[in-house]
Length: 245
Image (spheres, rainbow, N blue to C red):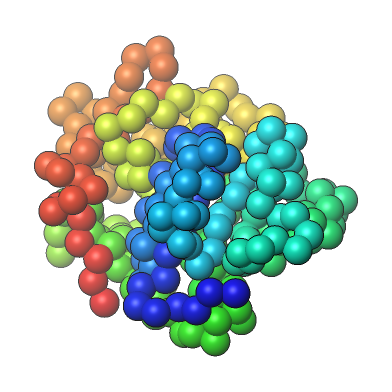
């Protein structure tokens, strides 16, 4: 078992780009460095070069092949694993634990829960307390994960749980088209029988609270016939994104 010296490193092995970006954004709230892997081969290379302290895996990818690859008995370079699954049944969770995962989270999840689970595993495994950084700023938006508050400039925006989760999903995938089906899968789960306008209704409510005019949007643009796209700030994942205490 490796020790933590300096910044903890978390490897993300999730083959759905939108879900991977949500996980990546959520982890930015903790004092951890996230590295992304496209597939098993890329993950193996990242393990050698990045030496992660924890991995977040998509347990459903390849019918469990990814999970099985990283949880063999007697692994020479053991590090804790948090699994993600869209299946909420007990059998799936028990099988994951039997294969050696340290924790499992069902999709959809709240960013707060994911970060809390990661930090708890880090404490149990390494005896190291990783501080939670509660606020992330994206352009004019300040998202306080700990207290579930969103501010635009100096204005406090009161969002429901679903609206804030929708904002997280879209902001994490800034510049990328999210179809209505993708949004439903991430926020309600793949088994949810969605009403035809459920996504449009929640986007409309979120826009109203952000005072975002759909004709001249600052945040959420409509892609006709396809879905929605969060408008990225300049250098969205670079200088314009600031994490504060």
